[in-house]
Length: 174
Picture 1 (cartoon, rainbow, N blue to C red):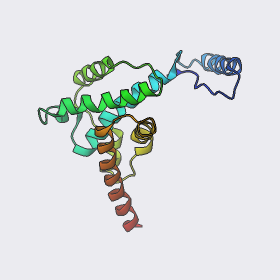
Picture 2: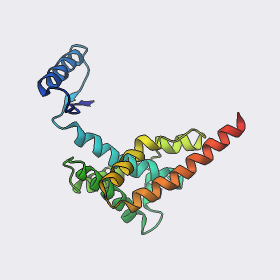
Picture 3: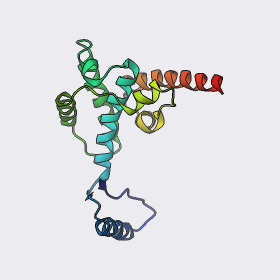
């Protein structure tokens, strides 16, 4: 587990740091394995890059990650483009993430067997998708900040349609 500060301009930085240290001491006392990171936004956005790619693409295709990447010559470039757009948004938000993260994420997924995603599982089971948490934030921030995110927006809009279908199916069963 990684923890860190999410700065609040309305709080004194020393108060925030004290609270973080107190929380960290409680975790250590409880023998929780964790790491305090200087800029938790880096880790947060790195996970957003991962989740935006794999959750959305496995859900839209109903393929595992390996099958998706091997599905066409365009799958890998599209995946990389999607990740780059999320990084564009993160950078515009002031988060220092580099584009080499894409290579690290791709290398990591290629070392794993093909996997699905939690969003894909939710979709298969007819449950609502966690779109706002996974894709909504980067789309909203990208739009607010004027970042060009055509791939991200397209995938988000398609998944909104999938989610609507799931909601309608659930409503008709009720």
